[in-house]
Length: 263
Ligand code: SF4
Ligand code: SF4
Image (cartoon, rainbow, N blue to C red):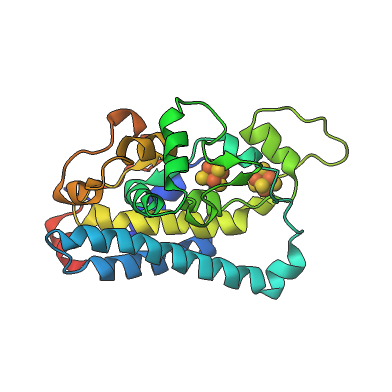
């Protein structure tokens, strides 16, 4: 029997895929808000115009998640209960990790990046990149595509950069006092993780291949393909197999025909 491919099944899969992951109402709310909006946008999207709708849906997902995060940040519970972030320009230990991104988000970032006044500089840097860390867009201690950065990057928030040094950059920092904690990373991570899966699921449900991919090499693979979104929308394989993150995107049950109709 084919399992139903529902939002509840997706959330269960996300939670089950990460050891120690706990239920999060904030993540579930972000997931639901983004999934509903993206599914609505995709309804009726056909032909070559469907690719444009798909790319626009990413901007919509980002806007929803950013608004939700601003609302969470403004709550007395967060303002009073959370220490200020250590995040600032010049830190950037978090940019030493691999960044996962839903395939459609990479298509969106590629399109926007090509339109920027500094596109030639950024593309040249991407062309010269041959792997390794930190991220190719980390420059002068800041993100050179800050307003375009992936959802996963938006979810980073830490009150103690030592935790990031040891976790992301694999540098063992001497610890004085209580050990650094990942605890405060959670509220924005929850919002933007919910948005990542809320964005990917409607595409998956509509039969479009929207896996998690390794952001930088995936972007590099399509940066010179202005037709990438349209090709992807038509079902072409545009990302090389090696950029797919099999351990990042939880396997989801296949949608039954009845479930697809309901969506
Ligand atoms: S998440 Fe960590 S490494 Fe990144 S800017 Fe914030 S404190 Fe620095
Ligand atoms: S895209 Fe920007 S924020 Fe994300 S890892 Fe790269 S430099 Fe850091």
